[in-house]
Image (cartoon, rainbow, N blue to C red; front, side, top):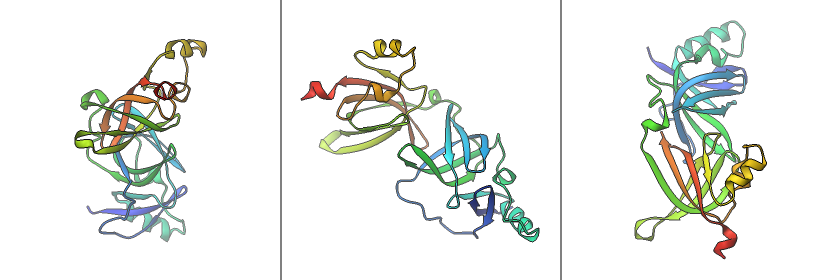
Length: 219
């Protein structure tokens, strides 16, 4: 059975034909995992043990078996289209192409796949990057660094409740706030950091952020 792309409307789907190659921005990232929840304007996916929530709107494309048939049936019934839950089910494996818009993850494409990939970050090889913090929010961290031959690079990491932050005064600050503290209270722009992360199908999830030199001390 052929899979069909459909365009997502808030709460419903409308047929968008069968494009040979959807046009997505170059900065599109991908995440692959299992659907855990859905709403009219969002979908939640567990990606290698990490929960990720994506915003969906009229620009979101969905590719799944039977989507076209259900969309046509809905149109014949005078409805704008089937709901997302009629095409993609909780518990199914999907691949999400998305854009990180200042910490908000917007789903450009949702595609049903056969398997969700590794079940936890531990199954993927851990990597480490060193660099200077360009920006930091409660859900993301961007750094700039240099590699072999003097080549420079920029990387953006996903931050969540499982990310460990290590640095001078981190323990004291955390204790003062009852053990709960945001990364923005410990890491600032200009800090030198060492980030341990897992590459989860193009999404870099930070498992640990270690502050090696504070910006003020580096001056």
